[in-house]
Length: 377
Ligand SMILES: *Cc1c(COP(=O)(O)O)cnc(C)c1O
Image (tube, rainbow, N blue to C red; front, side, top):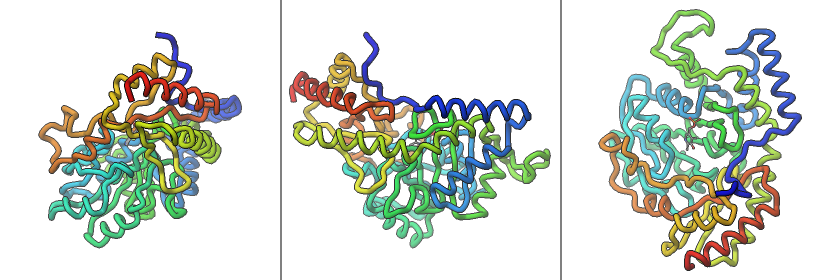
């Protein structure tokens, strides 16, 4: 099959970005400062400034940010974490990898997040915290209510912000509504360091515990003296240099994504057979432009039609619920999650990235109109 005209994701590095990154990496190579140096420290300070969180701790991946954060939140204790059933592997695996248990909970179709009502229904004596995931960059309007409810119940709230760089609700950045937030800078995210993660928190003790855990349990960065059973989840200077160049462009990226997303919303208004799932807050990261398909539409057939027309859709968020992943068979508990099953099976994500033009959006909309006709909507 020919190359698609529109691809779903594409990292954005301008010639100036590349020059700047190469300059930073050259300095690291010349000075030999490849780890635990000023690039990582500056990246942390810049994420702290962006989000308004007092502390930011860089990690090797977003998954490491989740696992180290959960370990630091619950040292030595066990218990159950409530996790949305429609999330990515890491959200459900992180509690297990941190010695906790995972209970998958249902979500709402218009926010892709659990409601406070659902959380109240499924919480047990065994629950220690809630891992909320801002799917596609959407912040549920119930975020503050969920945060207040967690505090009332003595539970911690931990936000998986892997999709939510730049998303704010009432002026507050994603990741600042509870005990901590975890970001990913994997290659496909809104901004990337190649691989990377960041934990943000206002809690100095929690930040210190994550730093200790990230660096093999060593209180002193360069001395082999270990006081905790940590792991190596550090970010290198080279990755931090890439991440910083991306972070410097986040505002610009968000403006482009917002403008392109608005064109989709306008173009979809008169299309039957589908409903966009839109953020009710601004700014939003627009990590994904999510569209719910009417039940009669065959998603696989629609994807094929679009691909033949030159449009490659992105991966769904996510194609199936976590219960359907073989690895979690017998490892996680759930009382069922019919809405999560339904939205996972019925949505698509339209291509959206900062190297798309307005013409590309028009091209996707035309292809989508034709594809819907072809699959019989
Ligand atoms: C990407 C992602 C992660 C994991 O991040 P990595 O950097 O790939 O380890 C965690 N949660 C969600 C929702 C993600 O999309």
